[in-house]
Image (cartoon, rainbow over all chains, first blue to last red; front, side, top):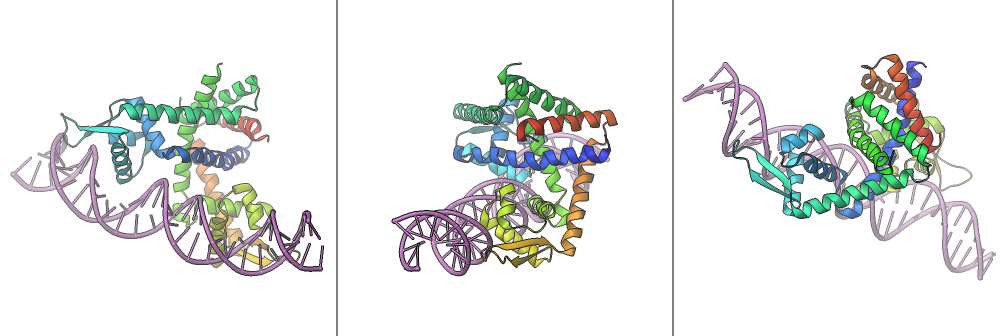
Length: 143
Length: 143
DNA sequence: TAAAGATACTTGATATAAGCAAGTAAATTT
DNA sequence: AAATTTACTTGCTTATATCAAGTATCTTTA
């Protein structure tokens, strides 16, 4: 297989997948959260009590933008922040009770959405699919 | 493999890949074209003389948005339009000479960008990667 | 075949997502 | 203790996308 074919395969995938992700994004429209906000909540769940800087090590958003999103999520009682004791520049961020529930809802929505996409496949096909995704993850991101 | 694991694999991939595509998008910043514009030019190249409606069968953009993008690309001499003879509501759209060149540039940029992402892999690994992408394409989009 | 409905495209107004730059305050380095 | 860096915030702007209403033409149907 030539390099050009390899690149074409990936680019073809990208063109299609970008649109899939666009659709996924639209499925978030009714929830009141953007995909980025949903990512942030996911990360806060994963990391537990964390900071804007830690979140941004994953997402690499504009700092100001992230700051505003966090501010909004706090004002909607999804997140809380408290001043860190060891470093007074830092705010420790965590999910509120409501935030935990909301994050769970978004998590379920996302899983349902993926379930829908693969629902037309047989179980062996779904397994092949997962295997392929895992393979790519391993190769590209070393996991 | 359980369904929940399959879904988790896909969601994990999505979280990572969304960011990759975000980076890809940024690589278009200097070009003066957005990823969407670049897609449009790609489709016009593929389809040859085409129409807004045909383009939108692929991209599903808001019609008004698409109309404006086309307008802009025409005013920048990338696209031309001519009124269709069989249907006076329709405009046939095609790439200008300049448009062909610009599209080619974007195409090259996109290929280079992908080449960069896979450059740390050996050829067999790159082949495995392409194979996995193709597999997913086949399963999800039937190609 | 004339009216009703559908299709192709456009335009004005607006929303959403994201980024830049300048700034404050606290920590770290020199 | 001054200079630099880090963590976060805020004002302003741009990029991307959507909604709704409208024009012109084509197609259906009564």
